[in-house]
Each structure stands twice: as C-alpha cells, then as structure tokens.
Image (cartoon, rainbow, N blue to C red; front, side, top):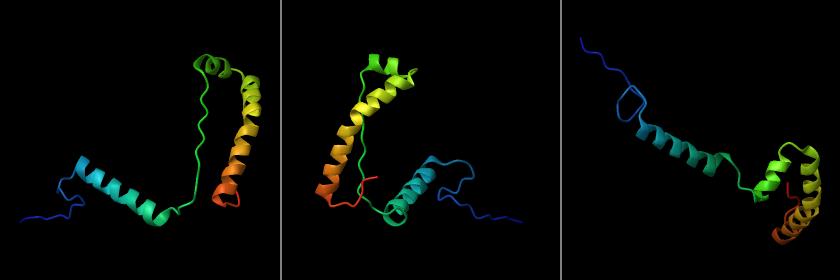
Length: 92
C-alpha cells in the first residue's frame, strides 16, 4: 500500500529548504509593500557622534540630554522646512 502526503514545499522535502524559504520571504515582502503597508512620506535622521564623545555619553544621561537639547532646534527647523516643501500636515 503506497502512501502519498501533500508537502508544502515545491522541492517536496520535509525539512528546511533555503530556496523555498527565500521564495516565501520574497512573496511575503512583496505583499506587505504592495498591499498591506500604506505609502507615506517618511524621513530618517541619523546623528553621528565622534567615538570619544560616544564613550563619555554612554554612562552619562546628563551629557546626552545636553547634546540632544543643543541639536533639537536644528532638527525641528529642518523638519518644519521639509513639511512646507512636501506639503505635509505633520512630520511625525
């Protein structure tokens, strides 16, 4: 008596298959980008801090807060300018 079982992978193997996993991952990513996640204009800000200063900032909340307070107005000004240029109601 022969048994046949339906296998989920196109390679017809029962274990982990890198090619099948990669294909499913690509399909899921395409679905998320095209149908699930709406497109909204976003910006990512990256602040670079010199390494010696990073070492001093790591244990010190006060120093980090001072540097954040100093850079905050520049970032807020740039966000406001971007909002005007792009015609956005808010940049959050």
